[in-house]
Length: 252
Image (cartoon, rainbow, N blue to C red; front, side):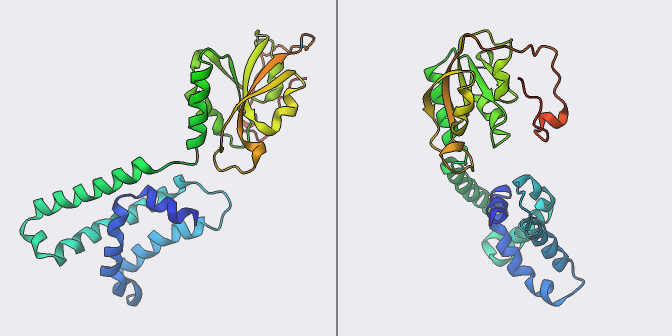
């Protein structure tokens, strides 16, 4: 049902007019095989239906059906105008009322809606407020590969550094003896290879991930004095590695 909800969000508030278009066009769509109405129905409904069969889902894929749903909204608006005489007599006033009604509904829905990343935002704002000068090291290889960008958006840029993976904690470019690492809770064991860890803060919920091991967590890492560092100044990461299609490079 992902695309059912996503479709309503992507086309809001105009999707509210789509049912009127379905009422006005259903006869032609069902009984006239070569009608424009049937083509419009198939175009609008087939895209989210077909996409629902695939495991990889994203609301951006609905771009292909924005056009038919926009046409349906326009037909719904036209049908609404034809059904009520007051709209025909005073189209400007009716349009103002309609747009005002839609704006209020859309504003309320937008202001009360919390995305799946809301709790992470609360967590990151607290991190930035509690430790304003960092230094922060962000694990970019967490399960949600886009999460690292959200983390770096909330944290002070001059005190934040991204890590391709946790092995980059060995980088010789990190000169501090004590740093703050943001990664998933389940990766705490990996951090112990580099130093002593202490859990400071943790997100209540991380994106669409489930289970305590995937929660974004702030660790304080105090480096082992005898940790061998690796020079990374001339290291190159390929596009495939940057997309984590390949596990390398790993610093050893």
